Image 1 (tube, rainbow, N blue to C red):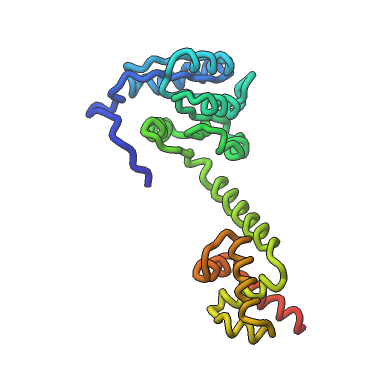
Image 2: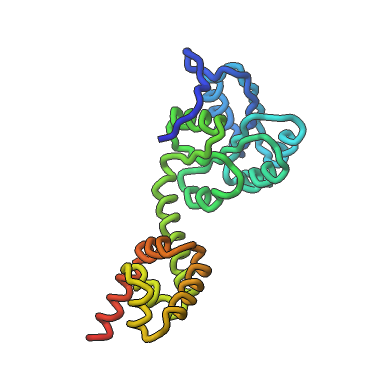
Length: 240
């Protein structure tokens, strides 16, 4: 659940006089978006343009609260515009809006500096809630983008795990599996035919490579990476 400060008066309108900039190559969409904003923020000052470089110039010349920009804006894309605003230390918050088929494009630029991401088929009331949240300082993702975003994060997490596992030697991986099974240093040393000091040296190397601090974190890491399952599978294959 997203909790935001109250920005609405009892009539449901934004209380302050806010300055908006709307950027899109389609004048009709700009007009429609301006009307949606004015319906809840009648005191808003709204500038519109079809040129993203013009929007950047305006943002540098006079402060504004919120800038809506089409993801495929030109000559600067929406992501490029957001990155330049953030890089220039400007206070303007940016929301990127794309067509329904632009979901992959929007998600690929989540780190561009924009504070909100929506597709144009978002319900007006949800878009207005997004405006409230962004003005309150939150990062907002439209509901239509959530499934694809979660899928991408899961893939990235698995890729990161595999990359870290790849840094471990075969001996280190075997020891990490045994740590994950809560086996002691003495037991590991005896079962591996090595000294306890060598086990501790391997553990120090494992901690350094995986950026963890102690045995407890190693147990959690091993479970998260399912190394025990991987090891059991490998043993089963070796016996067949």
